[in-house]
Image 1 (cartoon, rainbow, N blue to C red):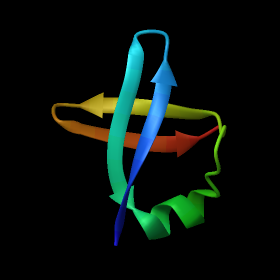
Image 2 (cartoon, one colour):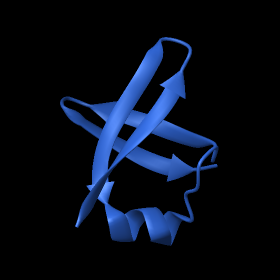
Image 3 (cartoon, rainbow, N blue to C red):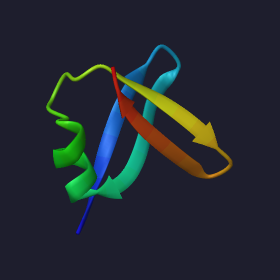
Image 4 (cartoon, rainbow, N blue to C red):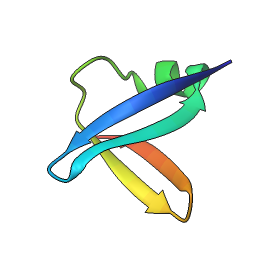
Length: 48
């Protein structure tokens, strides 16, 4: 199962599709501070 994660940045919204398990493993919740690493067409998410 996959989920969409929207990251609000000063330049606008960046959307990433990651596994729902990754969301649980990272402990992401609404309002979590993250870093979005952009590589070509992929966006990786890391919790701060």
